[in-house]
Length: 402
Image (cartoon, rainbow, N blue to C red; front, side, top):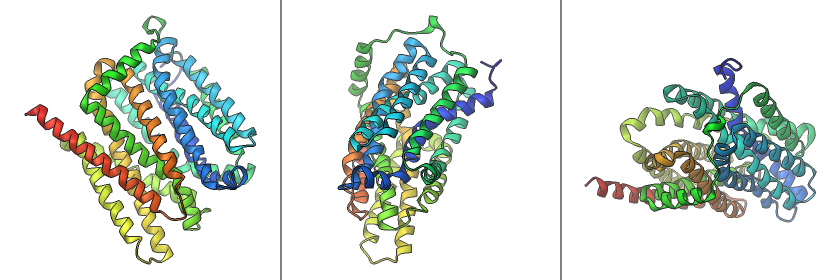
């Protein structure tokens, strides 16, 4: 690879592959009111399903893309994912019903899982140790910028071409990734290193993981934390638009919150070695319970519009910050005992937690009633359940050490 692509170019390409998911979700946020008004005028809340349907497809795809790339090579699976993503985007662009858009979004998610998941495998193929960790860190740092700018890009596309233009931007984005990778990045997995795709092995790995108490609990907590994040993403635009009448400035506020909450990874890196992964997750969830309960109580008092909006933005930042602290640690906790099946375990963890989180977030999002109560109470409930599971995990850990 090094004779055709510099390390800097490689990192940029990997960051763009990572960004497929965030771009596909966050750039849709400004389009939800128009899509709801045009395709579901009797129940505009159903437009939120455009987000969770994509996440559902991505979760299902995550289960298969890693093992498929082990069997057939990295680039063919990415090409297949990109082709499905582009075809689904074209269908969504031409759709005249919300149901067809939702079906296309599920297919989009399936396709997007290819570049997102296999990109990590490409890094593992070509680098190891501290260099690999550094490349992932830099790529993820670039990736965190995408949620900050994606809604603004989406709003710009809508202003020029309408909401259907966003699906054309997805096609353009995917084509750039495909051509860039195809012309500059050689296949990273040699034929002799490939492993056959065997569904029974995946089923066996899933059974083994859920039989391990720490891994099982970690996946459950990760599901709830992702459910919190997806619930916030599905309801945040209606909150800005309907409650606070700030639809036009929403992309800028969302970008500001994304940038502020990005510091979670910095804090986690500074503390996790001394504090430990389980305590970091438990403390973050405990703090979020207290903050969310305070927001619920405070909103019961008469507040000025500016004070109410400021309170929501601050709370939204804490929710994103909590997700930034917990997700990586929970993934590491689940992976630690599964080193002998690391690749398979990564696919199972990502798939199960994502699919279940989408199943939680979709009905909660549909409860939006012109107030933030469904959002705050839903997140408080999920936080409390996750916190209880982490306390239980700590007790199991203490029993094993005794």
